[in-house]
Length: 391
Image (tube, rainbow, N blue to C red; front, side, top):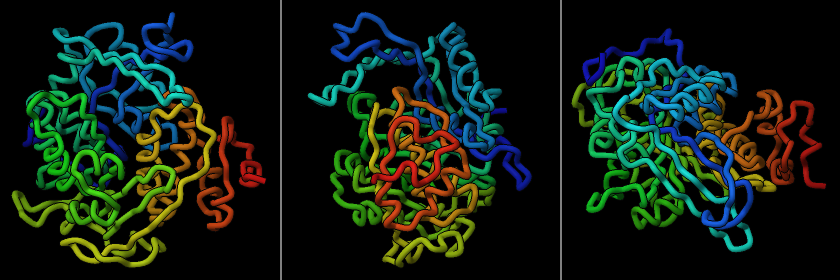
């Protein structure tokens, strides 16, 4: 069964997070340089939402990915690879009339900071997703539904789907939304900035980069971003090397009921309260839903191998810690740690650190956290915290 009338999640749901979006086959260069000069490519996978699902599953959570792929070899590769991380792909649909999306990218050139991406996703199977052809009973089967602004940019039908999934309705799971502003993906004449702001305001948990908020909305600074997003229970503002600022007014990942068509919005109807933000930091002014706790969590120093997939990994780490009921500071620290795992490998995905290893690092005092410097291989299970500190 598909569409808005589909069933709802219950307290005994077997899925922690359901991620909806397009995943593509990625062709990674064999050497640095322009796409025109690269002689060969290795094959991988990429997709913001499937990246989150894979990272969560690798971290021990029950994650599902919902999407559409072509009835082709690339679709086979995507589904098989994502499933190999432990992700439930049973709700993925095959489209015999449309292809699986692919893209090529260059290696990051740190000397010139040049980077090329060539997408071949127009008319893809995923771009045909709509409220009439995705399995709502599967999307609403988890404690959390994770979405991103990338899906809204793929087509008018995909935008309609995102609007429908973020609408308040009985039984809607907690909605996590990563803004993921990608100007090149939006169709001519589409008001991408206003659409992303609209969708973000309908979510319960929002991830947004300080830079993309300025680019998309002309909003500068974490406090101004929170003022523009008063409804979500939690807004995570990613600030690059400065770290992350988390505005929280309470968030518990579980099935909830919304008054159908109610105007109160997700934030005022979210289950949970101050207890979920225990230890978060100093209180600050909130939006329409009441006072926030505001938590500033510095980023880690990382020896970067490739700056791809870090945002998705951060979201996965934050969601993982949220599912475990950890304090807000630890949620953001787990986001930084998961991002550091991806930043120290060439591709979008890697095995995260073992949970006890990540917990030890996330529990460090502020001084010890500030001394950490992570490089390739730091996620090895036998590495103790002191072994990854800067001397």
